[in-house]
Amino acid sequence: MTLLLDGERVRGKNIKVTANLQIESDDLSGQTSNTDSAHKGFKPKTLTVTLQIPFVDSAYLRNIMRLAEATGSGGQRKTYRVVNDSASAFGVRQVEFSDGVSAREDDTLRAWQVQFTLSEKLSNPERVETRRAGNSVTQQGAPGQSVTAPGAGENGESGKELTGFEATLKKLDNYLGGVL
Image (cartoon, rainbow, N blue to C red; front, side, top):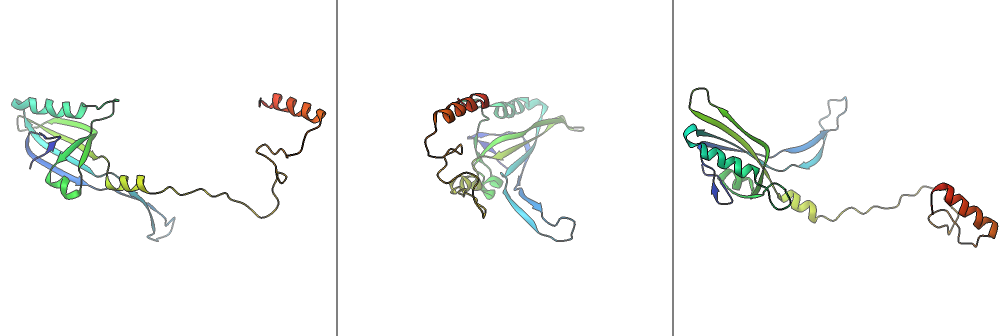
């Protein structure tokens, strides 16, 4: 199987790509045997790649490490265009390295068993979520009279003129209360 990241081939033997879609949900049953759950959305798809790299081809492992450690402008992880049959079947086009890269020496072969995870970047659910209009917040009210007088401003001040003594008390109150 072939795996290309920005047109650069990931080299190794026995390359296996496992595609995964995680669906988040919460159990709503409480202490009962009810099966209700709350859908919390789709998480980014991931591609887990496993392969073997013989010790004599250590440059292949260095290349994977270079790709994993690459950063874009601003220090963010680099996003790659991915070409792979499993990735295209899952609808994954852009990925970035996540969860680390591991290379374990094989017990019988003179090779590393390499594993790394690629997470989808700019997924379809993410695009839909950014396009979706935000829910507007409505002012909540309760029956009864409001605490402030009608026509009062933000600070509960009414629109009437203050007397000289009241204006002095207001300045003192604002000074002591930390409002200038």
